[in-house]
Image (tube, rainbow, N blue to C red):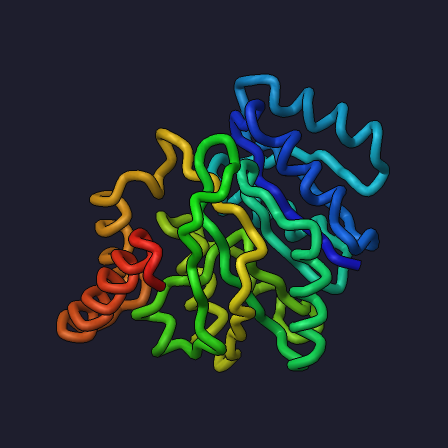
Amino acid sequence: MISIVIPVHNSENYIEETVLSVQRQTISDWELILVNDHSEDKSRNICEALAQKDSRIKVIDSENRGAANARNTGTKAAGGEYLCFLDADDIWLEDKLKKTLDFLKALNAGFVFTGYEFADENARGTGRIVRVPKSLNYDQALGNTTIFTSTVMFDRNKISQELVMMPDIPSEDTATWWQILRSGIIAYGLNEPLTLYRRTQGTLSSDKKEALKRTWNLYRKAEGLSLGKSLLCFALYSFRAVKRRLGLS
């Protein structure tokens, strides 16, 4: 079984469509854990209504605020052999789970990710597709942050729960990928856009200056890299980030 964890925070405008994209998957052996992260809108009511109609959906509450804590809460409750994350406003193509799982099994891998396509606020693809490399080790990933949260899949028999638990820091997802790769695990990329990455106003990732600051702090504080190596990795990261936004990756 595949466990899918979605942190839900004030996502009333998107969560139903996101859940529908999971229900449309060509694989049916999954559980969906919707983690309510102190929502102040109708998100929790919508989640409860969805769960009443589909026994594979569970709704739980996160004790602490933030996406990292919400994902960790969901991960602790997950019962599947495989683990995926999905953001509350993103959309999976209907064969996302099958293709990702087949890819993971074919490589006997513990950590895989896929390409994705940027989408507008209405989840319409923009044609800007992010290509991903065949594989990434820790050193390579420091300068290549193309691993996107809504595309990953883990084999929990090969990666310990401790490694997939996210630190409560800005850019917690990237910090988690590095945490896993630092242990010697290789991440393998399926170069096919199977997720629509919805770009909405007011998201953290839409603030480019803040994103640069968060990434720099990851190098210097979270990873403890030297100034020289941080500058090199940051230059590679910035170059590839520009390529992604221009649809050139």
